[in-house]
Image (cartoon, rainbow, N blue to C red; front, side):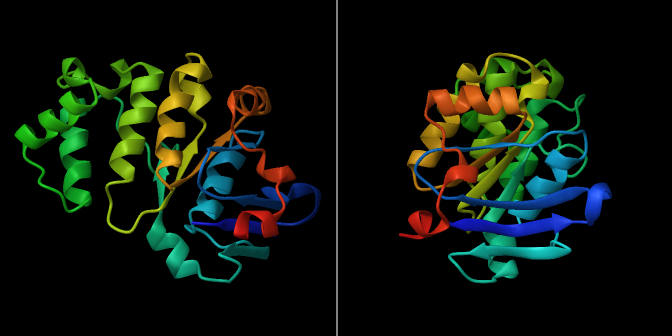
Amino acid sequence: MLVALEQAAIGSGLGAAVPPLSLAVGPGVPNAIPVESDERPMLVSMLLAGRIRPDSGRVLVHGADHPDRLRRGSALVDTPVVAEPGADIALITIVAEELAFASAPSSRRRARMFLSDHGLLDYAKLPVRALPSAARIRVFSELAVLRPGVSAIVVTSPERHGGEPTGWYGPLAEIAARGITVSIVTDQATADILVDLGATDPFHTDPLQVLS
């Protein structure tokens, strides 16, 4: 999915929750989006996934205004407040719930198979907060792309879990290489590291180039 923000903003003036943003994201490699302040990463993530509309500007899908298509085709991953797994819930429980949400077989046996396939079976009975950052980001991203029709994911503030970006960039790059649009909303320092690792800087990407 090809998504572009054209001067998209929430609020206005100096007090805008999200000042006007223009960027373009697409599949192939992850897109590193630097966003500062506490609340803004969540709001930018929700704009990119079609969960909220901008007060001004536009959010385009393949060059057109298709809010329903954006919402159906996008998934938020580990977004604080709106899509963050409970820290004290066992991982296998979360996996079973996500498999059900994806209309996939969701028994505990199937959940264990999923975790085994991703090398995380040892964490099955542990609370989500016990997951290393790389494993956490990988498992919730892989679950998100199982949902019917999803062709874009937005991973929010993965740096907040600690660990080196090199540990979790690889799994996201693998997902992007499958044709999924992967947007990583993070802080500036982490975004710089991700670009060095091969991520795209969507603020310096021509929307026409993404659409070509």
